[in-house]
Image (cartoon, rainbow, N blue to C red):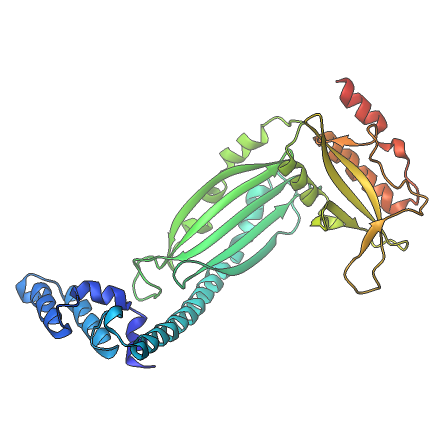
Length: 365
């Protein structure tokens, strides 16, 4: 690696110019001498600042004598830009490897504690096996953020415990394990999906190093007192669109709902032999939201992307969009819809009046 590239990993050209107070009237050597006299340990400065002054001088010397951008020729500007780009790519690649190592180390430690979390929740829920995913996202200035998502669905899919973990480098402590100081911070976001609503339980941050344990303690992440408080909340029938679609995505997960598919609000592919798909469309009448069921046929060849058209020739009703059969955005409608979808898979024909009695009862109330 070139000297300039190595130095740019630790300090930018702009930071080096600011540190030495480089201007068009002050040459590099003179600016360095002035900064060295100011920050020298024998004159009241510190070893750390003197080290940075020397580093800034080496960087500017190696990259063109400390000229400002306006003082450079076109070739010098191009060369300086290429060096900065090359150094940035090296720095970004190194940061990715370090974040990958961080994420792997933390995830391994966390997965060892997953059974403790399951035991912690067993007092309140009967849970399925947790779903764990992870990825690395871009963060600031060429750095990265590690992310872990954990979900504990209940056996009836009526409740889901959600944990989001963001792992970011500590800006002040760097990315090494050379000391016992925290090398990155861990942000926890906890949500309990219950009574068909996302209940935000809290957000916490821990400074993490190789010996930390607080970020792995289930009671500190999901306090039982907060869980009990959320579980006492009364279920409200009326829902927002966000909560309604959230309920579909969690409680009908096994049907793999696809949201915003070709301008259809929600579609379900049940792999039927007749290639019928079921779609849900949302509309607003008199400021009240309603959902309707519409059937589609997939005309795409096997293995190709779906090409849906309205189902015209079928023994199923082509639409349930009339006023009596549309259903409101309520929790009761989600129950009806779950029952309807189960029947749709098993039966060839569904009565248009499936929702009628329950809807009329709702309207009467």
